[in-house]
Image (tube, rainbow, N blue to C red; front, side, top):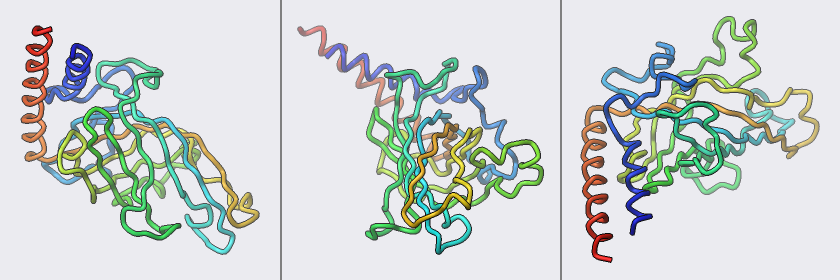
Length: 236
């Protein structure tokens, strides 16, 4: 019981609504998101997560553009950044993960797999689709050396769990990526060739007013549960 209460309390600490965004220690806040990538008005960022993992690209010589080297899978662990200093990716601090899932079809090789973010503490999850806006074609990106990193982008949420921390996200913004870009076109020498590229990035979760109200209600419920288990512990 004590261990469960401790775990609940640790989770609760990440739910505090006031001053949610970390503005120090290397993690970006919503202020770092370019105006061109910001969600619609009345949506606010309620968490910033650090991701570290890999993107898997598959060679398709008969295709062009982004399908020539197609991103068939992305997998990364998510780490909390609030009130933490770098490095964020310390062993044992994983709080969730992101991976591709064919939620919008049953084909073995879907054209649009859905990036799904899963939150360990309460099992909530959120799935996004193709970006609404990106910095891929941004002027000066190659000149400043950023073309070697994944772009920044804004994705809308199209799937989510019924409740839980991640279920309240309406938009997800990816910024501050390092590495992870698709291989050079000339390296696509035979169909099915796979290349695994490591990457890191920050993901900002945005919600609306209703989502903020629901987050506040869930915070109160977590507090109640923590107190309930504290009372149960005293009986032993």
